[in-house]
Length: 300
Ligand code: MN
Ligand code: MN
Image (cartoon, rainbow, N blue to C red; front, side):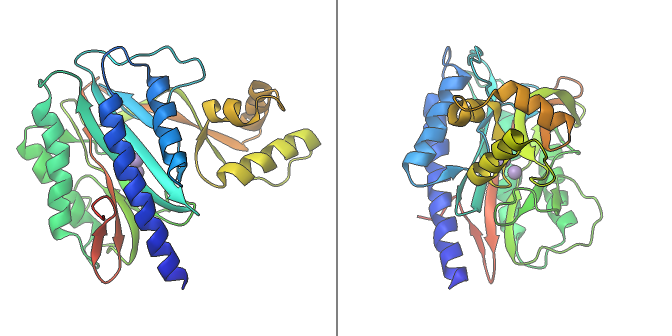
C-alpha cells in the first residue's frame, strides 16, 4: 500500500518536474528577471498539485549551483548566458530533482552542454541495482573528458529519501574507486561539466536555508517561527524569498534569520562557483530503482 502510494506520488512529481523544466526553457530569455522565472516556475509546480522541493536554482555561467533569486533581486538573463535551471517537486515528501542547461541565443558552449547531457544519457545505459557508485562516476568522467572538458569533482549526485533531499549517500562525477553498490531507492544523478579546473568553491551566501533542528529553542516567538517553518517546508531547503512570501506580516524575518543562523538552527548554503571561473553545464534526473530502473522524468 505504502509502496503503491509512493509510486503514484513519485510519478506525479516526475511529470510536474518535467513540465516545469519545459516551462523554464520557454521563460529563459534576454531581459527576463531571475525573480520572474523562479516565481513563475514555483507557482506552476504548486498549481499542478506539487510543492517545490527546494527553491528553483538559476545558476549562470561560472556559478555551478545554489543561486536562487532573493527578494527584490534585480538580476536578468543576458545574451550568451549559460543558465542551469535546477528544480524539484515533492508530493507528500516524495521528491523528484532535475536540471537542464540552456545557452541563451548562442551556440558557443553547445559541446560543453552536450557533455553533461551525454554523460547522464550514458549513465542510464548502465544503471541498475548492484552497480558500484564508482562505475557511475567512471562513465560520467569518461564521457565528459572525451569531450575535452572536466567533470566537477567536488559536486555529486545523491540518494533521496522521503522529505530528505540529500540522504547521505553521494554518487560521484568521477571514478572514486568506491565499491558501494546502488540499492533499491531513489537517486538523483547530476553530471556537471566545465572548461575550468573542475572544482567549485564557496561563494557568497545564497539565501537558501535548511533547518538543522526545531528543538531547544527557548524564546517563544522564535520557537513559533521555527515551528511554522517546519510545518511548511519540513526538512527541505527554503529561501528568504519564500519566508517573505509566507510569513512577512507576522515576523521580522531578517532579525529572526540572523538569530537562527547564529544559534546554528538555520544553515545557509553558500553559492557554489567554479574555482577558475570556468563555465559550467549540468544535467540531472531522478531515478527510482527497484526491480527495474525508472527515470522519473520520462514517465507519461
Ligand atoms: Mn538538483
Ligand atoms: Mn540533486
